[in-house]
Image 1 (tube, rainbow, N blue to C red):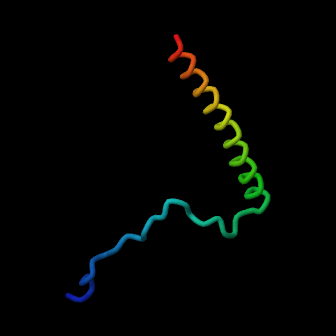
Image 2 (cartoon, helix red, strand yellow):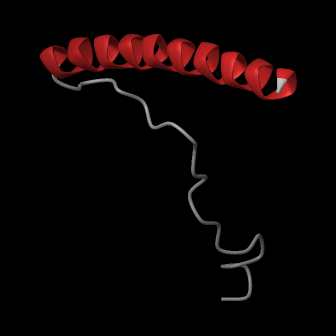
Length: 59
């Protein structure tokens, strides 16, 4: 009985991103495009922010 929890009861290690193995391929493909187009908008937003910052510095 004393040996049962000698090393403690361990919780399963949680990982940041769970693997996508065995996930519906159509869904995966769509997710890839969604990520790609997220980046597209992000670049545009960053460019606008830089432009606005430069404008405010000028004023």
